[in-house]
Image (cartoon, rainbow, N blue to C red; front, side, top):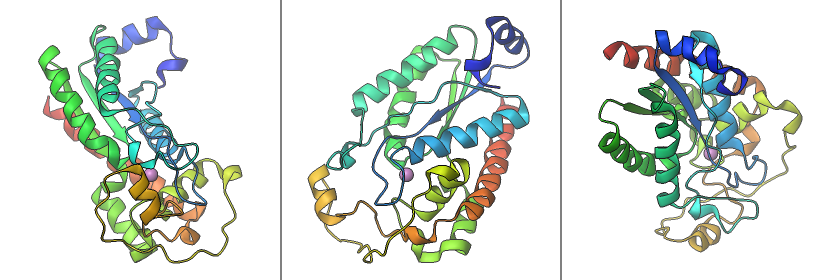
Length: 241
Ligand code: NI
């Protein structure tokens, strides 16, 4: 159930039964030579939407731009500052809490958002003591980690990974890029402080990811595993209340 395809009276009825809502959050940042800039937002939104359909949970509009300052030396990347992302998260929650929503499950597609979301939740709880927030980074769920290890081994890497590319190409097959030969992506020991450090250490944008392994058929399997795992986590969390 998508908020954008609902009417206010349908939301009123929904709130009479349950007060939980999904908020997909991703990023708009470079994903290496063959990954789409929207990969993180595409995966988070696709997974949250499917979970919402399965269990009748409302899905709010996605946060499509996240905390990606370290990718800003690659053309097309966009970022909020942590401060802005905290403010935006708080206002997403404020808007919906005003109507009675009180369980906000953020389905996250981007590691760079996690610390800032945690800080935002502290602000949320200060203002809304009865609200509960949860972040689920889909790619970190144990069944996903097991599946990616099986399909991609060390080729999974850390950024622009074949698993996220596979899911994005399963959801948008027409957007799949043909891969060209690539040098190995070295894992550099240097500390990364700035966006310039990132580009110097990882010139094509990947971190240790073998993007040739990306495959929409594997993406379909990973997507199914992610939907099941997020749904299970959501059910357990909402039962606790
Ligand atoms: Ni990503």
